[in-house]
Amino acid sequence: MAIRLDGRQLAGLIEQRLAAVVGARQAAVGRPPGLAVLRVGDDPASGVYVANKEKACGRVGIHSLGSHLPATTSAAEVRATIERLNADPAVDGILLQLPLPAGLEAAPLLLAMDPEKDADGLHTLNLGRLLKGEPGPRSCTPAGVMALLDHQGVELAGRRAVVVGRSILVGQPMALMLQAADATVTVAHSRTRDLEALCRQADVLVVAAGRPRMIGAEHVQPGAVVVDVGIHRKPEGGLCGDVRFEEVEPLAAAITPVPGGVGPMTVTMLLVNTLVAWCRRHGLDHGLADLVV
Image 1 (cartoon, rainbow, N blue to C red):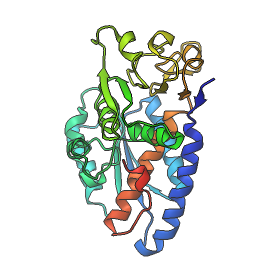
Image 2 (cartoon, rainbow, N blue to C red; image 1 turned 180 degrees about the vertical axis):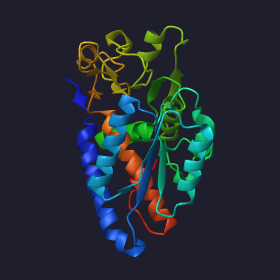
Image 3 (cartoon, one colour; image 1 turned 90 degrees about the vertical axis):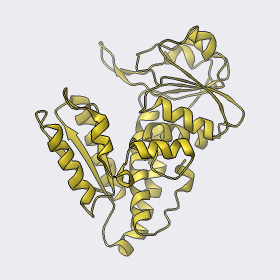
């Protein structure tokens, strides 16, 4: 039976560390860290995600400074809000909640963000820093995967890793982080030929394809570590991932459940990025180097 990579448990442990850092540094700074989550429109899933992020902020002592704009807000108005947050000295991290309403493009709005306050690591400069191995905020979901693998003691150096999915949000930065850890990385996608055979070569298989239950036992070699980044609502109720968990769990050495695997770690790494930015702005040691990949 596979070891379950428990994101909820690890997120709780990291939150305790973050709360301790805030408690120890706040007097020197004179204020708590500040995270502004900017939501545009009324996407129901985004509403749940934003509420979870605000609750997590409260647990570790980060001041939540979110804004909720109507779906009819123009790109110029969203940009003006981002620029206001850039200039606000109480804000250390900014997150533009995706997806945006129809008619709004994410790329130019992300580019308008101060890269030092980019809590989700998606600014062009920060993606370039990741590519070059330079310090900077990292994309939260792949950084959370790396923290899970490290906590479980999964050896990556010299291992074969396959990432299914090539989005700029998860797949591409995931591949770069695994490569930086000395894994041999292949990125697969919707046009990959013989996906099953390719995936079966993986010692570590990360699935971020955005397609419910697409990966099954035929894709997994015995003893592989399987990380399922997907999360989808099933028509009959409940949640599932991109992996057919019941098929893959008996084969895998370790696997993330859905829910409770990668999801909690994404939120936690958002807090890590905000807290690290807060400490850096004030020349303080954060003690979180093991989480800053």
